[in-house]
Amino acid sequence: MEIKAGIQNVARELTVQTTLSAAEVEEALKAALADGGVLKLAGESGGTVLIPAAAIAYLDLGQEHARQVGFGSL
Image (tube, rainbow, N blue to C red):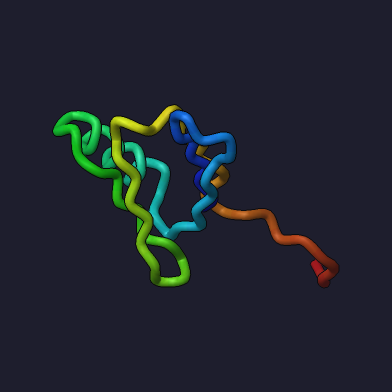
């Protein structure tokens, strides 16, 4: 799933591809906001993205399953 994060005082948004579900991302965000900590997202490529919860302006959660593009037999 693709997640776009808006960070306060930053002109560009951050895009992360993750294997987490929307519910898992939402729970991680709630926990980070509750304790004033850091939102930790595991990327599909094996990396980790850390965002200070206090700096998050918004999260845009994309589709859980990306649509396939191209030609194929039905």
